[in-house]
Length: 272
Length: 305
Image (tube, rainbow over all chains, first blue to last red; front, side):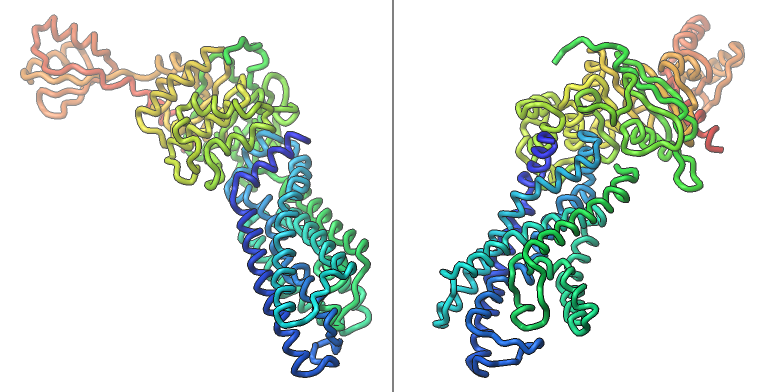
């Protein structure tokens, strides 16, 4: 297990994809958080603090603005750790290095579990980069506009820290997903379409009916936000969330279910 | 790295191996044995089932029937298989962004060797100069050397190489020939696959020839060569004299032009002696090959038709 872990860690450290991922996420979240912070502040200034202009009819007080902005990485940026995780598996198939990998370690379950564990340190780097970018861009903009940043607020710090946890778990979901869909381009496209389009739409639609509203809490994006304990969706009154621990279990569940499916399909077939 | 090997542990035994892809039987009840201390050529035309067979030997593909053991044990049953068996499949696979050294460093922990071994094998295959260059910029020949280096990481007793000469220049092929001979000389088992016999003709001691997934021939190269038919090409300024010699000797010959003959089933020494005895002036006397390649093609196409 130790040998397999060292091999898997080296596979990532000897390529550039992971720090490109971290850098791009940092930059993207920095800009996105700045833009969102500015537009929230401007909208309440023009319409007053009791604005109900959001789709769910919620209100945005300064604290809700801050927490919505600081959790943007969890609400919108989780594609980055998810792709990081998926690439751990799909790049082996893209470059056919899965053959020497399985020659060195034929126990396929061990290979998959090693990948799941070995992605953790890189997931932490990417997630911290994303969350730091979000907070820098968001708090910087709020401060520049003379709004409170709430960065000394314990609950806010907790939310920010837990959003790192949520993002790290997204990398595990990515590993599992990559094991199911080993075609790299297909895996990235499906992840993008689902996380950026399908799930947000589903959550808005499912929130309309009591029967589906409960179910929508178990969507992976909602589970991630539950871990952070706050999000744009909640602030805008669209949906309630699970508790943080439930969120952790739901995301872990997705990761493990995908991984088992991958092990029983792709990784049971002939490879190489 | 020189060590004495237990001969039994180096025996690759393939028995009744069968693999079907839908309606196509890629490997059909194939049995053969590869012995240590020799270089064995695993030969057959493209699509004969060589790579599929190697994948089954290596546990990457599951046979529909039959068994494969290396030293009495299946590949996947070994705890550290790369320590005993070094294998490279046809399309050598590398991440283009990794350097040659990093490629080896990735596998070193799983193979079970220290990092210093990576530089050792790079030197062995003559890639030390390119150790820090990205594999993406490597020529096919350099990739072949790196693939070979990867198989050597664990200092394995058994080497299974799929088309290792593919993409090598003549100098590279000569180097490979000497290198594989050296490894076999240490008592290792060396199996090299190829779709052209002439490519490995000077490398291999034994041949296993397959076509359409079935065994055609399993023998030493020497035995196969005995079966090949010799031929001689002769050029003489005395066209009539040459015709007379051919007629009187009862040889089967074709005249390209008067004075130039291709004589079948004869050795150059016999033709030369006969010409000398007849006082016939020769300007050229050349063995036109034992033509093992033709024999190989005939053997493998019989099966195909």
